[in-house]
Length: 154
Image (cartoon, rainbow, N blue to C red):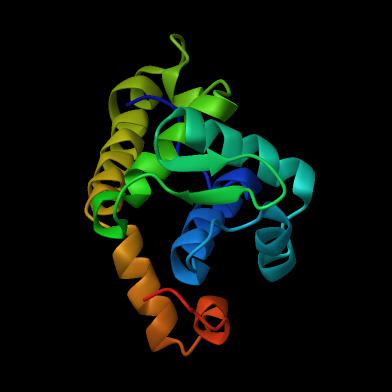
């Protein structure tokens, strides 16, 4: 995997949006206006990221007045690593670690430790599921809006 892992706003918003959809999902899809309101994410950022997550099979989108987003798979089968990769591809900025030229110490010593640290972090993210983040939200006593909406389906 290439590209330096930096916590951009877009990456933060993408992870927050997916967890929001998982955590607040009721019987119907979650509207982007609700995600935007709950997470304070500007709509222009949100729609672009959500569409890309739909294209990559993390979310599924439903059009129309009752439309919105839901997870494309179970919460335990979507990892943070997957979301990170989608956003990094979207951002695809030049990474100083990948510059061909530089000092010998830079190229052979300093950059490799950066790459190793990123690999360790991605391994951790690949083992971290949306389900676990929802459990953390529950442990933090964040109220799920889905729990407030009466569910009449039997």
